[in-house]
Length: 117
Image (cartoon, rainbow, N blue to C red):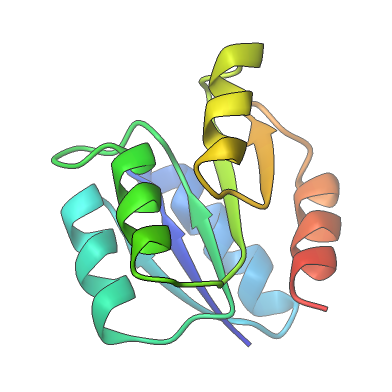
């Protein structure tokens, strides 16, 4: 299983990559929205973990374009943006799940398992 982590906070990304790899996933990392778009256009993933506050291209725009291409890969939004309106917008644009930062790593790992079943 291959996971794309689109996260601009390098410390958080490193922790996510360690956790995913320890669980047996192949995990790739990008730090901007434009890098996420390029990775999604050129590689197949089983799950995308997507921050919304990415530089260059906002995460919701990455998600919108990804779904507009007909992609059905599960997307888990992981972001500090946690108002009800933001959660609804992300889910309406095609996210499969939404978690707010800060988060419990154990819960994230469970959600990843659920989305990759």
